[in-house]
Length: 171
Image 1 (cartoon, one colour):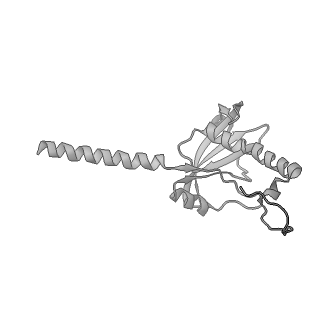
Image 2 (tube, helix red, strand yellow):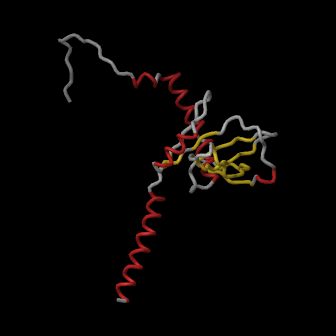
Image 3 (cartoon, one colour):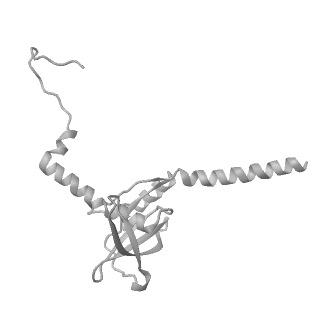
């Protein structure tokens, strides 16, 4: 009887920890940025989080400034290895009475504060800042490639007729 009791206690603990650790392990992370002319709907964040997908985006047009004493110096390591010191602050924000998000702000020069919101509750705020601020280099790369190498033409599909006597290599 005692052995049976310990077996069920062990089984309960194992299932309990497996359930919660597996949910954490299966969270996927993507970076989603709202289009400049419109904001991502809050329902999108909620829908993605229900599928265990964490999202990042900028929170545009913030008028309220956070006090200077809330910002702490952080060492931010970008994917290319570059290390930059930034002053970051973090708060929780309940948007649209639907979902809790992490709001992370970077203090810039003067009164400028760049605001990021995310449903990534596990990553370090410096890692989140690096992910979002390195995105600009990717966008600039694709812009350059489209302007100078016509990379956007690579995704076009079409057919063209050729003369039937043209030799074609059969792989």
